[in-house]
Image (cartoon, rainbow, N blue to C red; front, side, top):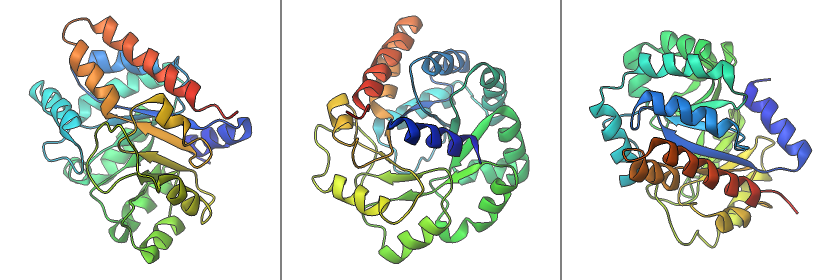
Length: 268
């Protein structure tokens, strides 16, 4: 059982829906990221998704793209990110999930990257540009290291493809709420709850939903249909607006927002 599996076991036992914030490694710098990881660990987050900056991101909207650009301008490197994670992970209890392009993993060296990620304290990977049909090799290598290779499913994924993804799922399913890019939205699709419930009826793997969720009231509407909620752009935007002015205020703002989200996800 991986750290992610164990976390969802505890959450289900407690009747709690997971809250998973997304942050960009190195925005505005890695010291800030390390401090933010420690702070989020105290905010009740169930998992934390850590984005590895990439110059050609998949499906990321302008807010996250801009955060990647800011980090890359600081010449943030994969080794530096993993060293920072290695320093921080022993001090926190929240499992860390890397959102990383396969191009980065491949260029770094697949097995060296996985070994480094595991030793640093990463519990799972989301690799958005690796199709399920081509993921068997990486999944096997992740399994050997007890790393969860988390798959993605979208509203347009064909049923036969969904069945194959579910058969090989690890950790949790990342369900993309909309056919589009990341970003804050005032309304979620009307069919989202039904889509999530249909997906959960087909698998025992937890189903977490991301893309577009930005407010506690949106999250609270999903407590009966999702095992977890992922929020990225609303958090990354706060960091971009505040971190260059007042780092402590930026961290506190993200922590306060995260606590609101966690509270909104408690089943009643």
